[in-house]
Length: 147
Image (cartoon, rainbow, N blue to C red):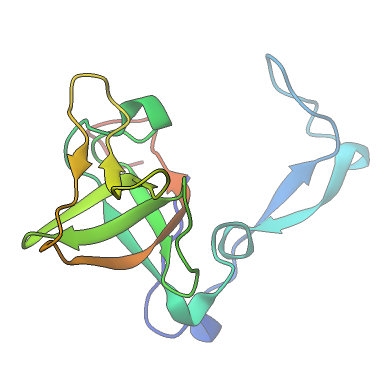
């Protein structure tokens, strides 16, 4: 599964994939037409604010306990105001990072979601620039090869 944004959102090729009515725990539902609820456009599923959305590929393992792994693609919405607990894309000390924003109690911290990494505590002179809030994670289950 992938969400691709190329240029203007309105000029995207709309890919509608069948969404089956029944939920699945194991196996695959019968592809009979009677079970199809509607079609699903992956752009609609992944992107709430097209003009303010960008994608970024993950490097590193500091967020694996949040379900974010190396080579995942993050869907980032610049129009959302980051609040306590959001996973954000930010610049701090000339480094771009993806971390969980921790505002309360002070001081402000950027928390990795991997116990092997230490939190980043912001000092008085630090300037944190938030580029957006992560809204979705796109992952390929087929590593290393294209379908």
